Image (cartoon, rainbow, N blue to C red; front, side, top):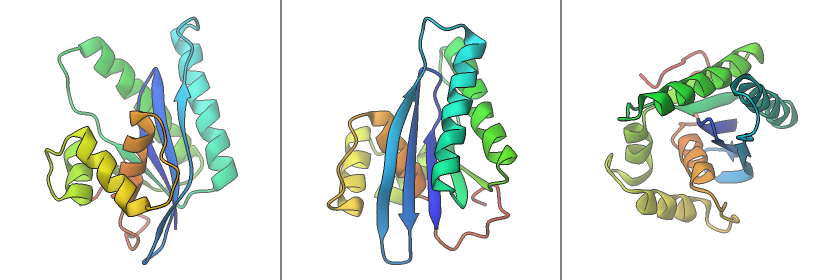
Length: 163
């Protein structure tokens, strides 16, 4: 199964493509899509969508796993991230790819067994699971990989949520 994991963001969006089988998880590709702060808001959303479409077209994932938002104190940032997340959901739906959503707590629980694990613990588990894979440089990519790793192989493709 080819899984596209997404860590949604407006300035930076982590993307990771995993080939996941019952016995092995292989990192095929990861990147951090960035948008230019010089561009207007609509152009930045368009950039996210266009780059995501290219990734989907090239790797043809069977499912998209996207991290759900948790609310922060900065409402302006939360709204922009929510809108960027909307672009992800739109592009996946447009490509007719099932969507699975996990909260950060669910992703951490799936990887570490502890829902309050810190970034360092999540990164360590990603390294352990992927063994010899070249580790990405950004936290956004690592979070996208973690989201993809949290996806069980045998999940029915018609489900859009983990429960």
